Length: 359
Image 1 (cartoon, rainbow, N blue to C red):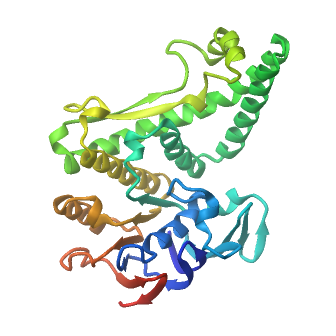
Image 2: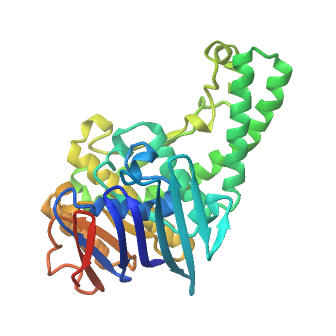
Image 3: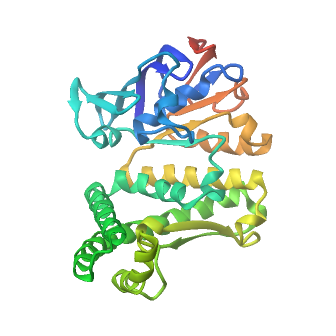
């Protein structure tokens, strides 16, 4: 999978840019605040429908503009698709090959972007929602029934919560409990299986990136008590849920954690080790995507030099040398010349929201 031309309008401080990407490593170089990260955000939006920054969606739109636009041509499996994504202050709009797409998920399925950026350590140190998104994004691409099951689960959860707040009787709650459980079974199974596969790759990468921490393991917390079926857990907690007005058990409460032999608790990790742990998880996710779908996702690395020390930068670059993924990387200076000599390279200078091709 690779992007060809990338056209951007009114994304943060980038008024307009048209970039012809190469299939290998694309470097975006320039001073801080120039707009480099905005280019990666635009790419990420095509895959996730949001920015990787924790900000209001409206702030993605350039000040003084009513909307933003991102256009690309994505090449995969011998075909080219033209994709367009627009955002006003109230909603998204999407187009594929010139036709309007009513469900944005149809467009997001066409592009896969895995991104390491300054906030990626939240995958390890942040709340469970970020870790659920990490897994569910992968399931969206590899499990054909995921969209419908996830949508049905969210609908059942909303209905159950509304009944709880309204103080409705057991008979009505029983109906939505059954619907909740029916969809939860698949979500739970898919997440568990995915993390089992990912764990093997994380452990392999840990040997290279964090050998001092020993063997790694991923543990999955499904969102309700061990040894209980979800239906039982919902019945046991029904009175408590009524008092609180929300459902306290189910896949919407799921989580996972990464631990190491020599750092069993998250608090044992330094901030640098949290960043490396997040990097390991993201590279493992990209690798598993390739194993499951037969093509690499696009890899974005934002401000790599400031996020990792020189030794670990070199290890990341060595890893990139061995894979066939298209890479977009930003920095205040170019990557070391001896690295990535076997990969096709393109370089762009970014300053004050303008992009100029250098190489």
